Image (cartoon, rainbow, N blue to C red; front, top):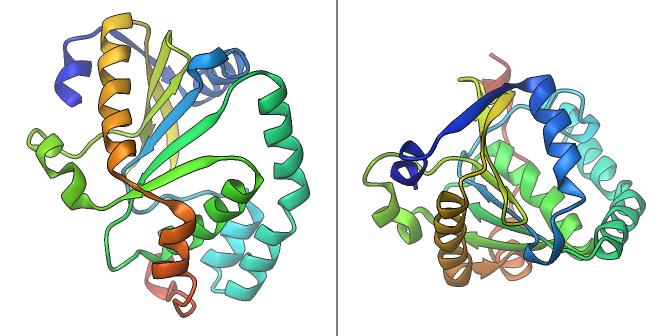
Length: 207
């Protein structure tokens, strides 16, 4: 996938410009839908209350705050459906599951229950695609806009590269769809590998 994007011309958007541009296009995804590929195992999400509780080591509070968002996500996914598209996510999960990812998978489980379509794949399922480096973080809106989402070394969102090359977008979407088809539904993965995990140890994250 990196080689596909290397051959396409993109525009670097700093954080504010990226967020504004993303929001402008998101609600016009249409029948092609919204597709996201998440590869990194750790991010930072300051400003997200449940993540901040997790990061402080307050696991029970983090889960409670996630649960309290159910009404918000039920409304959000109804709005998405009313706009005529679906939200699809492919999540790469390495084991042992990172503390961050344990938190995120609980949030993604709630989103799935409210209408998001998520599949999980292990690193073995994408090994042949990573001969030229780890897969990038990708969001595709409809068939006309692709963002390579950019983060700093600590996992803080910094902006994105925007691509509008139709051939490159189609090829990246084909790759994501292939990974998606090989993946496991989040619900079954969560019950099998996440639900029974003890609270994550986060002391090293705060060092």
